[in-house]
Amino acid sequence: GAVVSQHPSWVICKSGTSVKIECRSLDFQATTMFWYRQFPKQSLMLMATSNEGSKATYEQGVEKDKFLINHASLTLSTLTVTSAHPEDSSFYICSAGGQGVSYEQYFGPGTRLTVT
Amino acid sequence: QKEVEQNSGPLSVPEGAIASLNCTYSDRVSQSFFWYRQYSGKSPELIMSIYSNGDKEDGRFTAQLNKASQYVSLLIRDSQPSDSATYLCAVNRGGSQGNLIFGKGTKLSVKP
Image 1 (cartoon, chains in turn blue, brown):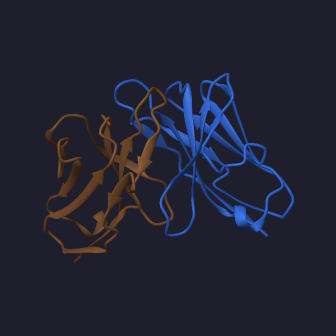
Image 2 (cartoon, rainbow over the protein chains, first blue to last red):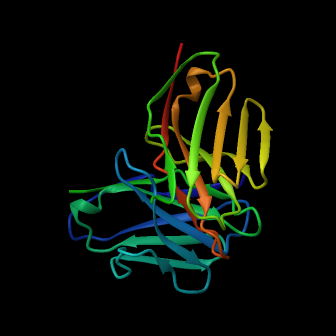
Image 3 (cartoon, rainbow over the protein chains, first blue to last red):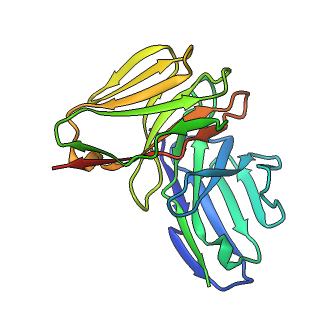
């Protein structure tokens, strides 16, 4: 399967600061990437769909001004959590793929964010 | 009605047994179905995809799809303790975006 990386793997930040998470597709070009959030013992929740060269599509209830997504190239999408609060502490996971007939998505290793 | 439903478990099977994981979905236009394995604290890993009615086998894993019944399952033969994880069923939402809808997952425990 395809390889997707994320950086950083974990981050601790203070309340009110911003954090940027990078998602890279290493061996294929991804015109579409997806950002998920997962709270402990809960399922994956899709936050937004990131499209190269255009604005992201956010799921209902996700604040687009708080979770800034940039997909500037075919191999890189970034998620910036602005003015982070403790309730934003979660496991953030990106995936790439979802194209063509197969719609297979390959996940990055995830970023664990802790806001203190 | 939830879009993708799974029994949350935990499902406990002895080592060497067959583990059977089930999933139902509500959107009849869905065409692509996936099983992901997620170990605690890790991200999901794609283990099976299925697009047509019937069975698809890959090693110890067999996915089964019945679109008429809106049902997809995963069988794990000769279960190993290393198979202990949460298994997520995912269904494509339809349309060109390729968005997946995930079930809440079934936690599988394989006892030595």
